[in-house]
Length: 406
Image (cartoon, rainbow, N blue to C red; front, side, top):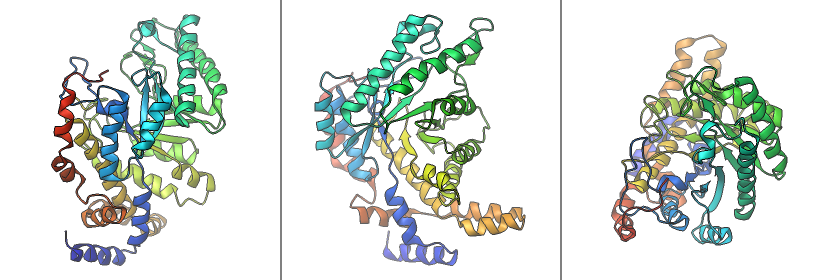
C-alpha cells in the first residue's frame, strides 16, 4: 500500500470532518485479550478434532499467545481457565508470561465439567455442591492474586431441561446467595464479570438466561460486579447493540467475549458472519465515550475486550490473528463515524441522513489507515502473511498431536 493511498484516505476523512491522527491514537489504545483455551484442541458436542502442534502445557499456550501479540501489538494479556490451566507453580506461569511480554488476564472458573454439576453448580439444590462451586471460585480468586489478575469472568451452565424439574425461583435465590459469598471475597481492585446465555446446555430454563438477569444480579452485589456480553449468546435477531447501549448508560458493562454465530453459540471467528453488528456495537461504545455523563464515559473506557472462540477446524494461531484483526478493523471503522453529523440529523429527525452518517463509515476501506498504525507501533503491516512466512507453525509441529484439550 503506497503512501498515496493513505494520503488520499486522510483527505477524504478530513472532508467528512474526521481527525485521522485522533483516530490512529484511539486504535493504538485498543487491546483485546486472547484466551488460553483458544490455542488448544477443542471441538463440538460430537468430536474434538486434534491438531498437530497444539500446546501441551499452559506455558506453551502462552508461547503461542505471544506470537499473536508480536504480530498484532494489541493482545498483551491472556485469559486463563481453571482447571484447564491449573499448575502447581503459578509464579512460574506469571514469570513466563512476563518474559514473553504478556500479562495474565481474566480467570475463568469451570462450573460445568464436574459430574457433581449435572443439575447445576451455584444453583444446585444440594448445599454441599453449591459450597463446592463457591470454593472453586474462591480458588480462582486466589489464582488471580498469584498471577496478578484483577478479573474473575463467570459463566454458568446452570438450568433445567423440563417443566417442574427445578424450582426456578428457589434457584434464583441460591444463585444470589452463592454470589454474595464470592463477592465478599474479592479484593477491592477486582471485578466479577457475570456472563449470560439464553440456552444450552439447559434447554427449558437457564438460570442466567439474558442480560437483564445478569444485570439484576450484578446490581444487587455491588459496583465490583459487572455484566459481560458474549456476542454469540443471543437469540436470532437480538439487537445486541441496544443491550450494549443500555448497559453503558447504566454504567454496568464490564466486558465482552467476542465471537460470532450463524445459528446459536457457534463460537465462530468474530466478525465472520455479521461484521456490521460488531461495527454497530463499537459505535455505541464510541458514542458513550463522549457522553456528558462522566460515569458513562468511564464505563466505555474501561471495558474488558476478550476473545472467546472454539477453533475446531481452523489452525489455532491464524484463527486468533484473524479474530483480533477483525475486531481492530470494525473498531477503526466505527471511529470514522461523524458523531456530529449523526447528532445533527437526529436533532432534525432526518432518518436517512442519520443512517447515512453511520453507514458511510462502515463502507470506508480502512486498510491504508491500519497499515500506517501498524508501522507506527512496530508490528508487521500484514500480520497474517508475516505469521505464515515466519516458520513458527512448522517449529511447533514437534509437539505432536494431542496437546492440551478440553
